[in-house]
Structures are given as C-alpha cells and as structure tokens.
Image (tube, rainbow, N blue to C red; front, side, top):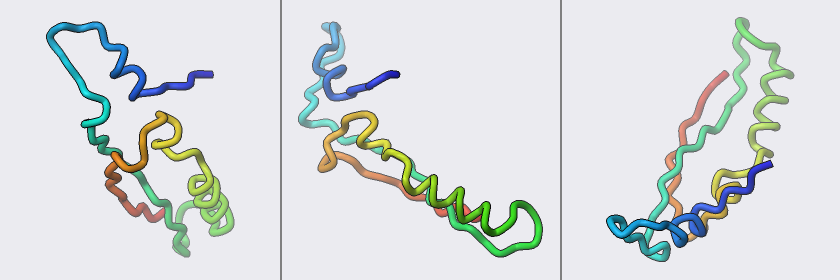
Length: 81
C-alpha cells in the first residue's frame, strides 16, 4: 500500500532548475459529492444511497496525500446518480 506524502516529496526534489518552497504551495483539488435521486432508470434508490454513503465516508484526498489543510482549495461538483 502506498502512502504518498506530497509536501515531503517536494522538499526532497533533486533539481537545480526547479526550486519549490513547500510552505508557499497552494494545492487545488477536485471533489465530487454524490447525490442519490429517485429516478426510475438506473440503480435502485437504496443502492444509490449506499453508494453515496460509501463515497462520503472514503478517505479525503487531502488526508491521503498528507496535504496541509490550510493550503488546500477544493472544487466541488455535485453529481446526481
């Protein structure tokens, strides 16, 4: 299992051409919020609700990549299933 640590990787860059200050970086992330709908086509409503619950309880991208929360900007998209 991988444990990526982006700020640590930026600190350990071995490049004379690219100098990155990890304390001055802003991270932009995309996130989708799944919304179950009561339409007659597609999955049953209980399955849509279960999928939305599992999606909501998944590990956040910020935590997965060990990003500092005060430096993260998230773009949220609402997706109806």
